[in-house]
Length: 260
Image (cartoon, rainbow, N blue to C red; front, top):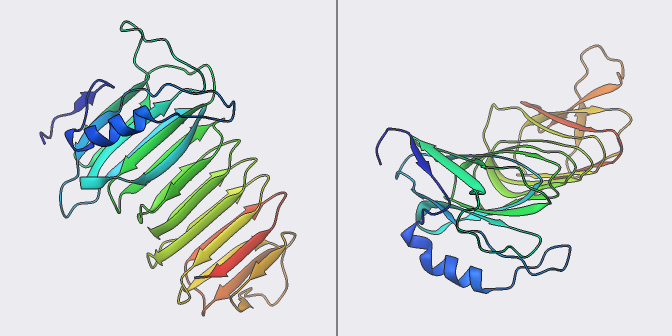
């Protein structure tokens, strides 16, 4: 892969995914409108360099997301429409992708007129950076890398991540399950209107930072870490002796803290 910046459009295909792409395109795609959709062509980005971590950064408005591991360490994207789409060779492309080094940037090439859905395939262990707006749910499952998600008007689910996770959203629940935690890095989970459900390994060492008004259920014994001996509104609760801060904030919801 050349180190020079490469711009790929939706006409580019990853050969490793041709068979999968055809099979998926032949399947009916139904969204919340119960209307069969037309699948836009994949954006094939290529394969990751062995021994190096791929970073996949995605920015899109009016899009819900599903992210899953891709075979052969490739990166691909499929944008699905909520309504039938008439084939038009002169229509502007919907997706744009660039790759610089080990970082893949995926974004919309034009504004969308409805809530679309973006399927992403990324290498196992990739670091994800997702920024969405007014886009329904974000679901990341089985990638086993770190994840940073900034979203609005939609819930966020990150299952079986490894490393660290940061999530900020509004009007949606947050569910995160970490199978391994990168020691020494703080994490935060913030929603303005929703519940937070966090699962971490049993041996994690951390300090929860949580407002006193938020209902909290924990599988771990929690020890107050307030240094002045008074119970402040913003509580610091040590887990397994304490460690990096895990910030938990919701204005209208509860927090569940589970042991893996």
